Every structure is written in structure tokens, then in C-alpha cells.
Length: 50
Image (cartoon, rainbow, N blue to C red; front, side, top):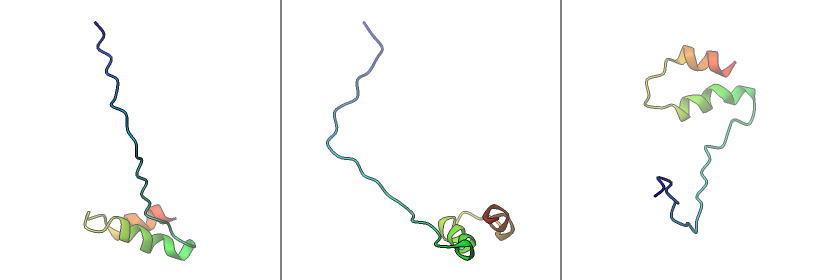
């Protein structure tokens, strides 16, 4: 007997996207929007946005 489990077949695939910033000046506002409510300091978002 095998421990291998065959997944059930599926007939749909759902893809989602946050989109993205359109230019360098939009990076930090985009990150603020995506991480809203998670308590990430603005200084960290600016560092990541660099």
C-alpha cells in the first residue's frame, strides 16, 4: 500500500493580482496600500521601495 495521495481533479484555476506601481514615484504608495493594516513602519517601506 502506498502513502502517495493523488489529488482530486480540478476544472478551474483562479489567478489574482495586486497590479503594481506604474513608476518609481508610485512604489512606496503601492507598498503602503498592499501592507495596510499590518503595522509595517513607513521607514521600512521606504527602504524596501529603494
